Length: 452
Image 1: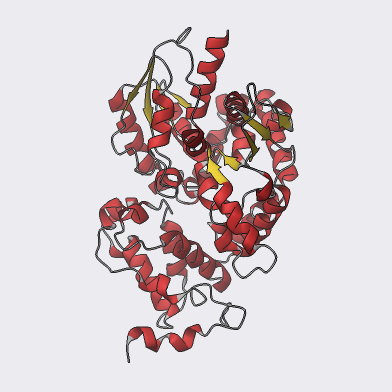
Image 2: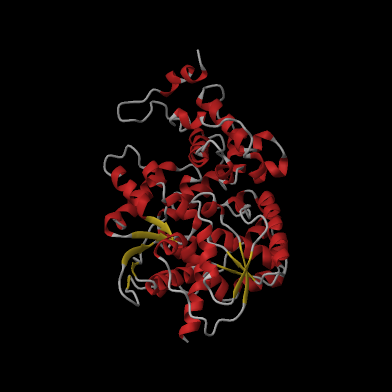
């Protein structure tokens, strides 16, 4: 009996297309697991395999573990769960794979397997996940309240006092590391700077929705403001509701697929895709997830059809501007700028968007773009990877900063808030004089200078 036919009995679909097993990996279409040819072309592109040279730390090795569980040859164990969370989820292997293996789907279901089997459970971890994934990120009001508290902590000088007083030296090493990673909150959130409806500054050509994000809204709300300004400058009426929901990427990437589906439904209800020419995101990690709601909501009789339309309407800001074309900024009042570009993993590997950000940057007068060596290599941020896997994350950050220094650029452009915050922290720790900016902010500034 062939391997494929041997496992058919373990994957018997029920009439509605779901599976009898509660195992996420056993519930997958088995062809997704079979697709890997074990050719090894992914190995040189995988940051964890590059660091350890261990087969289990490679995409090929991880898929072998996933398939063994689906085949009932292996039970989920703590080692399995640890391995799935050692993976960055950078998706570089998908760019390299000649067989088109959908590693993103495998990766999410493997982490869901680890969570549902409870092999990683302990009281501390469960508390953290309950507070963050199940409570904080399920309601943006709660998240903004936390952001407001951190903003006060920083603006009133408590953070500076603690860092200068030496008190932090008395704290455990990991506590000191986490405090050093505390992001700087913006003085205002997006809703304080952006109207619910922004009319185009010229003839209206498109009606778009603007997704403000979670981390983006707290740490880089100025990028949201810049995005809306650029869209309006280029003929778009922009709808930006003050109250929005998380996209669900954090949940999907951490094994909470049911919560990711709940958030997908909320977003589709708030932004009916049939009402917009495009649904805009400016965060690479969010965008990669947002474009796959149809897969999250497959077999949902109410939402599946709308989810397919949603997926077609979601556009990364670089992608959308590349599609509609932009008004080039006038040359007046444009100072020289030396810029290098770091490609966020979920933009280049997850969404295959590489040319458009460069085209946008090259449209800015007096901007010199220097290519970054290993521009598509992960910086180590990878969602919350720099929190749960600090050692590997810092190795990758050091590697990234070394290449950035080699370009002698004063500005690093990148299209993801996680990358921006992680590289900012690294530059500060190494006393590097670098500005980390979203490409859309550089374009918005060019427009403003020309208008001054």
